[in-house]
Length: 386
Image (cartoon, rainbow, N blue to C red; front, side, top):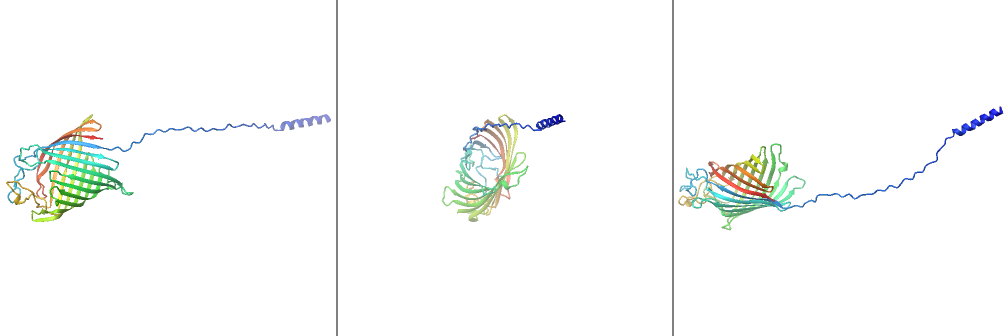
């Protein structure tokens, strides 16, 4: 029994020793320090170019032929001794068989300043014929300064200074300032009609004659300029010019029975334009162009329009300065042309065109406008941009 007890005690001691959990010794791991190395990143950007002056130059030579049915042997409209137009006169248009050399262009000098110029020189081509015709040089300059939008609105304000010298045409000059407020962003626009210009412009102008210091005309008023783009290559322009005149000399009105030193006038222009491409092959294209409409409809507070002439100015069939019998007049025209274009370089285009203008040349009074006739015209030139 004693031996058995000793055996059992030994087994118990061995079992207890084997039952104890063996815990491994902890392993210490040393972490290596993390080093962050920043590399320099180089970003290449295109250099922004500053503003460069730009614009275009257009030089054109144009010929005007004889008006349809024109009497080549008479120098002007024929009037009787009472100053009335003789019935049956075929001298529809006094400006026939002459040329016009025109230089025009635009220079955008800065982001907000630009200058437009136009110089026209007229020349009689048949000097042996004793007819009246256009001659002399007309010069027009227009300076624009874009002030930007007004406050937070979409109304753009641009100042325009206009100078014009009519040369030998009527020996007068004109200087005008105009503040142009463009409301185009507020106008109706759709897939069929887009308003690109809707400008209201109060103005002041001073016009004077070359021959007399008192022959001047102070003008105040407001103009409306609009332009609309239509489908199929059409566009429509509508303008209104309202002007109050204050003359330095009394003006003859109402068939010389009335003289006034002031007058209020309204002129309305309405034009429709279309360009249709007929043929294109590389740099060569042929277009059909059309323009026409009221050019212009004019209304005067005083009677300054008509065909009446002062009887004492009738000398051997030639009549001098006219006086009015009506308050309004209008001229309606249509000018279709076919134009050939050649794009010589990306910045240079050569062109030539031929067509005819249909207009009421002689009689423009509102109550008796008549005698529409054709006058052929041909022109050629070039246009370059820079």
